Length: 574
Ligand SMILES: [Zn+2]
Image 1 (cartoon, helix red, strand yellow):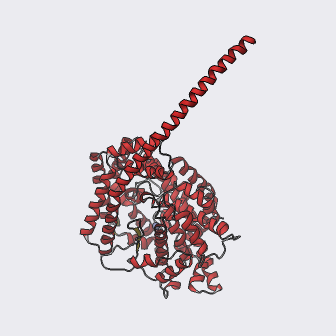
Image 2: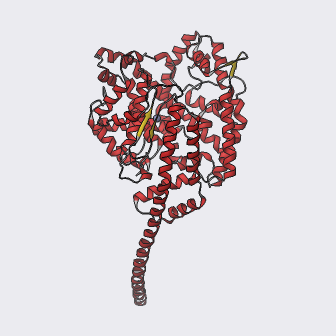
Image 3: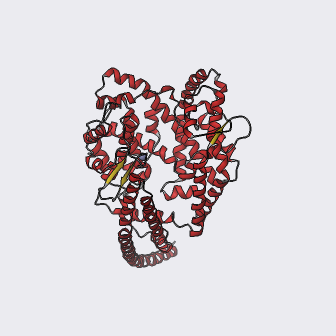
């Protein structure tokens, strides 16, 4: 015992000595640690300063060129835009700079939050452009070839070539089931025409992803946009569970209406009996003509008045914008942050219809997001943390054009008129949202498996997912590559799930604003019109921080919890 105690005392003394030594050492280590962190942080700050000095003017020029191109339609402007984009891409493909960013990231020495976030943004921007030039050239060439084939292809009905709008008219109004079947098949024929080249493209994209250390292109795309495959899987699984029953119920009701309209039995309903080639839109059986309410209004003035009322004035944005239809002008709509210093504009082709009411509210949602980024934040952080977060805000406002309470408030409707809109519109919106969720699950799961193994029986996999999520029957006989007629596979790969995340966040923001910001019991008859608290809340918690936080941290800070499908389900499913 004694010996042991002497021994232990000795050990103790030795330990004490070592402890002091280690204190000294750790003192040293931590001060050199801090010192080297300062060096790393300084080095990063210098890198950022030089980088932004190069990239910010180029980005502004490119944005202005794009604006000129889309407002005039002149090919010289499109060329200029293309050249500037190439210059920007060249900067991000620099391998030496990427390597030093990677070192800084792995060093663990960047402790300042703002610097850390800027490093993340830079790292992923460079990562996506680290594809070997020869391989990149092959990908771009094949991509162009597939897109060209796609746009020049015309499907046929009984040997006669048809356009997309011919197909659309037959599918939305046709009663002849044989003709519907042929129109639906015509819309899918492009799939078989491009499939060989498209699968080659998928394999090249995978090759590129593997060359920078990822399993496949899907994983690279998800990680490079700061998302996580597991987290996405969790969100989609929860959404599946919560929407499965209600969707089955709504679809059964719809099937009854459709079967009756064609004079067939429910069990004979085939994919061509739904009004959309992919059953991603609600058939027009619940449609109400909302244009009636807008045709004598000015959608621009309504939008301007509404945004001013919520404390998010847009008069400066509208003054810089290009709002009306013109020869040669881009026919759709977008919002454009030109310089991250306040020059924000939208492009529209306004008409006084419900669709354009929705569009201008939507684009101005993107625009106020950009306008109210805190200009004191560094340039690299003056953008949304993810494209789906700005999409969510745009959807949050865009949804109002069909909202009965909002329409009553803005268009001075009577209670009776509001009730009438409510009856049809609510059902339509509810069905549309659930339907879209089921469709987005098909897209997400298919694309994930497509890139994981492009050599599997994809045509069969497609129909397994359609049967599972959309409850639509596959046609008899061998299946073709009709799925590849969905343009997004080619032009916006591995992105589709973000439309759904945008819807989820729009509902989460809606719920938080109603219950926590405005402290209301329910969202019945809520229009947010004239309520500045809404604008104040969004500006401070969502717009101002820009990309200062990872998207899910921004959401958690703004709403008290990370992104969840719960509130989307509350709003539309229950
Ligand atoms: Zn949008």
